Length: 565
Image 1 (cartoon, one colour):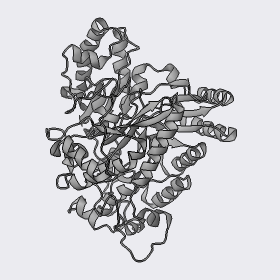
Image 2: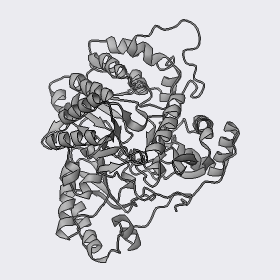
Image 3: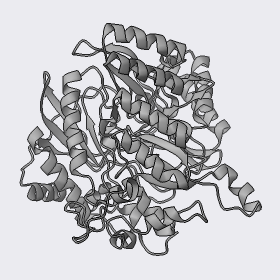
Image 4: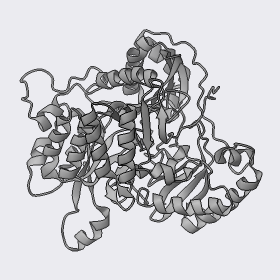
């Protein structure tokens, strides 16, 4: 990789252009030049290789099996049936393993080879979807509560989130020049960025909008969170949260997961200026020397929350009102059919680890293609990707409901009717074989591990226990593992840190229970805890709360106590 810093690469990139076009045109290798591997992230892609094949190819004196992951920018994860069909076509034409729903409500494609990158990008944009700023040191895909029941509120909040996403896009035309053949205009500053500046942000930046009582976006895990307050169907404003983040580094106590702090309350018209102020404050105050200390959470811990609030108020020209109490009941999805406030029907499907493909579980990709086609013909409905890697078919009439229900059954998409709560709520990151950061399996291991934990629940007669389980292949935390009641964080192949004791609202971090253990040790540690939970829990007490109450793990509150109704 590059020997100079990421900050240098950004500064010298001419507005994220670098030498990407030359790298893409080089037929000798399936890889990009070192600096361009950094820059392509801002265009929504990561260079990867198949780690399952690394040793075999090394012995054969072949370069690694390079390919690219591409991630969409889809604020709130809302897609029309036409857009779904076009993305399905992209998966069939260019990618491997179907398409994947991420924990930020984006679609990821894996296994795209270099010579087809541009064609893939063009095909995604043909769906009126782009990938700009889906990765890199910028604001990434804006997450929005997918709760289908709050129809009017969702429409209002989604519109504001989409507007904010557009406002925070990089200003450079590099994306359109490189991928869509836009002619570069001579003159002017190609790197002019009124919000980001020439070096963009110190690290990635994540924004989430929650609509109580559901915390499906895990709003306390966001760099910048907005919790909607409603008076009936009317949005009255947002409580602003700052400084959340999941990533850490094994063995480094100076890195840590953190819950966001309440900063204040704003009215809807104050959203964009306050958000811009938070972003530019992080731009100017964030650590650009040590990247692992560059997220907003470390900035706030270094300068102090009150000083950061004053900085935001000065930059925005808005005095923040005191934050309001937050009333959350859970941070999972609600599966099956529900009726929204508008009388329309909405169906939440369980998509294990977000992977939409045809396989033993069912013909999920084919089935959703059929669903999209049916919605298109009926002229109704939309797809909503959830922050928990699931999919909502939203906005259906009674006739549409009957049609979709039949298709869901035919193609095996009715897992939500058969699976136990443990399986329904489990999350996993991609991890091996493509993620370069993965230390252990996650997505591929999830079904087997869920099955083994479910066997423990069955043995102790708590089969229906609604426990939130998460697996991450490394401590960077893409599956938000530090908010799992049970979580595995990869340390090495087949070995994990066992984390326990988060709550079901996403408002308490879990804690380390066993370090660097294998599956047998993990199950041996869990069984007596599950046995005790079966006999000694209070009525309606959740597993994470039980572990904290009984002293199995100590609670890990955030630095500023959360005000929860």
